[in-house]
Amino acid sequence: MSRRTRILLALLAVYALGMAALLYQLLADLDPRYRESAEEGLIETAQLMATVIEQEVEQGALPTDRIAAIFRDVYARRFSAQVYQLHKTRVELRAYVTNRHGQVVYDSTGRHLGQDYAGWRDVRNTLRGEYGARTTRDVASDPGSTVMYVAAPIRWEGEIVGVVSLGKPVQSFGQFVAAARGNILYVGLMSALSVLLLAVLLSFLLMRPLGITTDLLAALGTAWWHDERGRRRFSPRRAWRALRAQSRAALQEARDAIAGRNYVQDYVRQLAHELKSPISAVRAAAELLQEPGLPPEQGRRFAANIARESQRLQDVVERMMELSALESRRLLREQQRVPLAPLLHELATGARARAPGLRIEVTVLDDVAVEGDPFLLRRAVGNLLDNAVDFSTPGGAEGDGADIVLTLAREGRWALVRVRDHGPGVPAFAQDKVFDKFFSLARPRTHKKSTGLGLAFVREIAVLHQGGVTLANAHPRQEPGFDLDRSRRGALAVLRLPAL
Image (cartoon, rainbow, N blue to C red; front, side, top):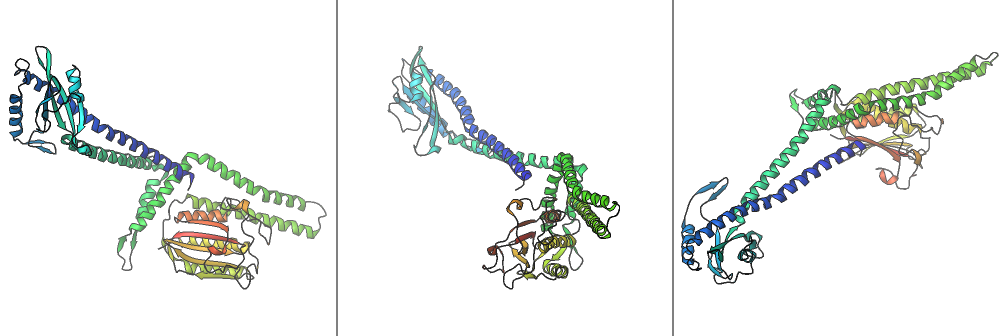
């Protein structure tokens, strides 16, 4: 995973955690706020009820018959009230009255008459002239049976002679809490998605001068294709691949726009370092050619050195131009179906002509095709094969085995092209540098280095086709078609491409 991807995922994780923490806090705070609102209403109702009862108190005696009649009538009332999604048709308010000793003299439910409630918080605090309230479950194991009680004192001639306590089942407003939670979750999630969408749109608008928006439209245009009858059709698979490629291109463009100066400086520094050696060799040979009395044989050798180093300079410049042009391409404009088996056979035939002493075989385990640019794919596999030829020597494999084997196979949704040689393999110090620009190892036969741009070129082609490439020391167990008693020397390059 690249550093850019890790940074992006970290930012998304921070955003997701922040939104989750905000929603959690809002949801956790919702139920207490509803209870506080309900308690405030119960306080006023209890005070009103206590005032009504006080009108009927005689000589400190509580009018329990009058209180029972009031609640009997209110429970018998039927009405229709639509409170948003709640349709209410009856009163759910509870009430009980205790005397000055905390004994229940009236209970609207009829279940606790005569019981001693002096120990309950609402009754105890109210009898002492303090605010009394409590929340208690009717059934200890059922959280849905919770009832909120708020008490008010009943006075006669300034003395507290009793307590009226009104109860409200929490379940009666619990559906409001559930509805509010659902709304908060919906609004929160929609807001989070809207912010992400807005960020994406703004990023495209900000990067419009870089051509990303135009490229996106062009990429979606590649999702249309013509069938065998010439009818124009839309391919969701092509559209998805185009969007994935464009997202990577957008990140790459943003990085280049921010760090473009450092990127160019690094390029120039690497190029200058690579050109310094052949330029010095050409200059030295040219100076020696100017020496008087130089033997013709030495002159020819120095001239050959100049020609060789000049060719190396030309190769570096041409490869740099090709690589620069490839890196500037964010998308594949024209794509077509490319069968890989004929391509491998064609490249192997060319390699045998260039290196007749090497035994080069092609093994097709699965006849796989990919979608892409056939010219670039040929260059990618060709560079891997050229690399294998450079590091192979005739008879490098044990027994009658091939010196180089090209294998085509399919694993899941991937087409895998394996190029296996039996050369010296990849040294440990070079295993994480083989795809760096200008990094090259000396060839075992010529002891010369290449431009160091071939594998970087292959990697860019693989990325452009939404695939990847690896190069490591070969192990027999990793290679289809190889026996376990074969030599473990050599390198194995694997080009991975999305299969059709």
